[in-house]
Image 1 (tube, rainbow, N blue to C red):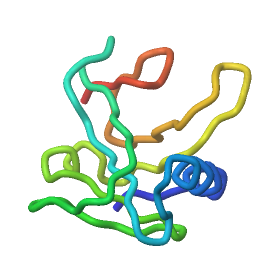
Image 2 (cartoon, rainbow, N blue to C red; image 1 turned 180 degrees about the horizontal axis):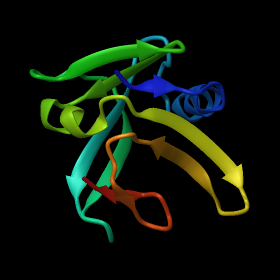
Image 3 (tube, one colour; image 1 turned 180 degrees about the vertical axis):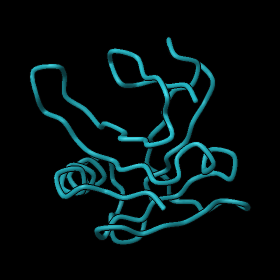
Image 4 (cartoon, one colour; image 1 turned 90 degrees about the vertical axis):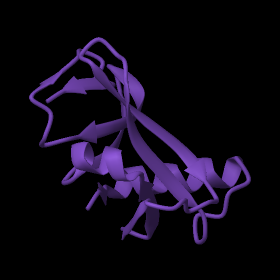
Length: 109
């Protein structure tokens, strides 16, 4: 399961609407890919399609889709949004990450 904080929910709804997606129907696709200074990096985009093998969750009114491979790395993660001095953007609070980079966009297990 992936959770969505209240502030992240508001930002997701705002950005999905701006990009022509319907937050009531469409998904936030969250994944993991190779790269970043710690070995793995997070990938987040909006999607209208549920592909075979995807895991689908809903938390705080947001539909989240994760491919099967990424799910193993992301289970228990909370999606948050930061607007602070260290930068603006989505933040992944991942209990599985043993090491993260300074920007918080990559991690290793």
